[in-house]
Length: 160
Image (cartoon, rainbow, N blue to C red):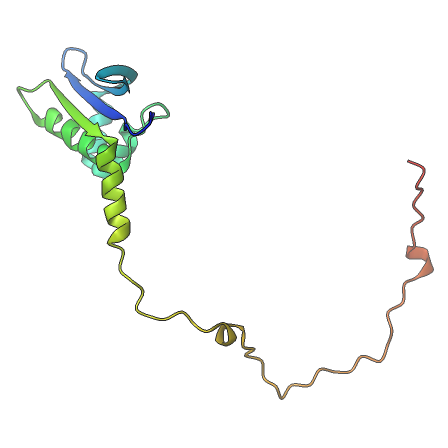
């Protein structure tokens, strides 16, 4: 949510709840200045996370994303890395990740600016529209005229 020139800040709290054998991800956002509000909480069982980690980072990101929790790609990558770290850790039980949307927007702007220029000049319109048909083929002359059978004529009432 943008207000004037401010950009939303977000926090993701990832908790490894060993007692209940599950991971929790809470998403917070700065809806008011200097105040974070809980937007969403998702819970995942160990079995789901373990099999997703084994299938790779893309599978883990897909497993973590839901209708309610769908972080942008760069955020999702960092969340996945944190989940993997918590899953492997014997001592850590939670991780907090902070994001500022201005950083995400700046990264996207830089990516657009870094797009390489096309080496080729665009084709001239005449070249693109030029027919590639063999001029030697003649179109056969059609001597018959088109006739409509009287039986095919449909009378439409305009009284409606």
